[in-house]
Length: 280
Image: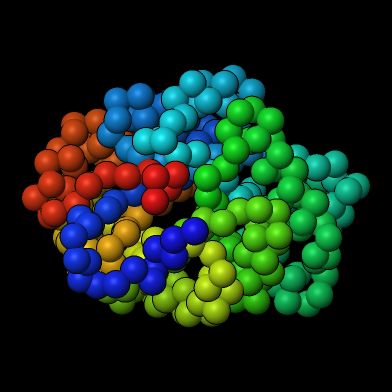
């Protein structure tokens, strides 16, 4: 297995490679439909599934598109909705209503020793199995709101993913972001650096469209900076046919940008090629 982050820089002959990964497949109909459309048109190269939200019909539609050029991974979700496992099988992960705790609550409970590792492993295995049973063996994993790189909790989740056969994961980076959230994300990235060593990861993550409306200039700036740091880069995207109430994400501009196809030409100008997680 190639360790993406350890590839030499500058490369001798290989072009820079970009993975455009759409998070949140299954989260809601606008996100799911947008990702299916973009995947069918070849405008993106990867997606990660919220296995506890996606319907059977969603998974069947995605299975028809999955290929070496469109990889499908797990968007590990332990902080939204309810578990795929029975609540009685993972009692330390759910509240009195059988719902997952929010990210901050889960993290604090883990730090206080109130979350059982066996419960985490049970639910993660169940989410992975659901994708595999739908003909979508996960090529990689990331997590909802970057849980897999939270201090202390993140290394535990990464260890479980590795035990369950996951070999590729997202590497959270927030280089260049000096806002308060960016500084927190940089601290998270540092805290899980050691745990990531046994997993293959892209060398950098572009999250430009999480903080500004999608645009050609934002794409060029984000990808160009990442290519100066790494040979294999992931672009994190959250497209949608409509916005999600209470979410800060700008899903419609992202969908419209990818649908326009300009990213392919910009990527060529930057000396890169589009690849999926499965192809590297």
